Amino acid sequence: MKSQNENIALKYRFQDAVNLESQGKLLHALQIFDAIYCENPKFKEAAFKIVAIYEKFNNIPAAIKLTNEMLEENSDDRKIRLFCGQFYFRNSMWNETIEVLSFFLPEEEPISSFFIGYSHYMLKEYEYAKISFLNFLANDKSSEFFPDAYIYLAKIDIQLGEFRTALDYLKNAETFYTNFYELHLLFAITYFFLGMEAHSIKSIEKSLKLNVNDGSVIEWAGKIYLKAGNYKLAEGFLRKFISENEHPSPETYSNLAVACLNTNNIRDAKTFFELAVNLDPNNRLAREALKNLEQINGN
Image 1 (spheres, rainbow, N blue to C red):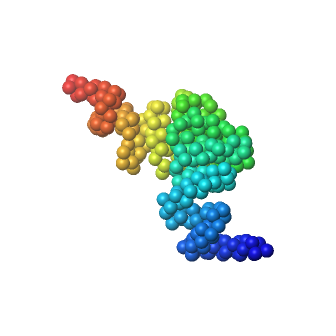
Image 2 (cartoon, helix red, strand yellow):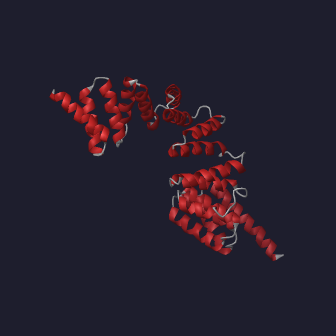
Image 3 (cartoon, one colour):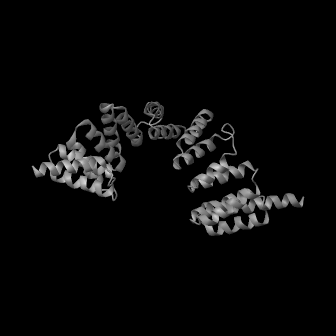
């Protein structure tokens, strides 16, 4: 009977701490959760709350320490393992996320496959990421992350040069998203590599309407218009991108230089080719262009 009364008292203390947390009295709540966990190490919900408050205080080292301890002492506890995996994921600890969540079969905890896939994606391990995202899609069609998995599969196939399958994934994602600028940007990139310039222009224009401030959209607009031969628009977008970014790539400078050449802005073209070569001495296009410009000036 005493044990039952103690359990009831423990639940009341825990609820008091939860109420304090909801009121923003985090330090007081932390003290109670910590006392409960010290007295009852098997009360994992208290440990979860402590980790969450450490995160709110941005005391990530303390949160990691407690999470590691929980996992080490309860490696077979599925609830603790899932909690720890999600904690590692939130804190961009990609290798730890993969290691901890690989314990689960995709059909047992489908969300673990999404987190593993994303972690592999961030590590640029695209083939592994693709397998995990496909496992997730096969086992959980009701998750809020379901359309996101299609987006990441498309990004992966763009990286792998599989543009036809990337297009299929984007069309699947399109059934969930209509006004998502990144979706239209990915369509534009995919069509760009497939040589479908009219479709690429249409998609990048949709993306620009939805988010004209994203640097990737601006840069890709410049590249797409350059390929389509609309040099004036290409020059405008590429100049805008370079003016708003501290470290443009040599490729971007070269693209802008080519656009300037085709709008008869020879002086600026030479300047941008020189910047491209300074950043990348092996930039063959820029070096050859400069050599040709010097010959033209000499004549």
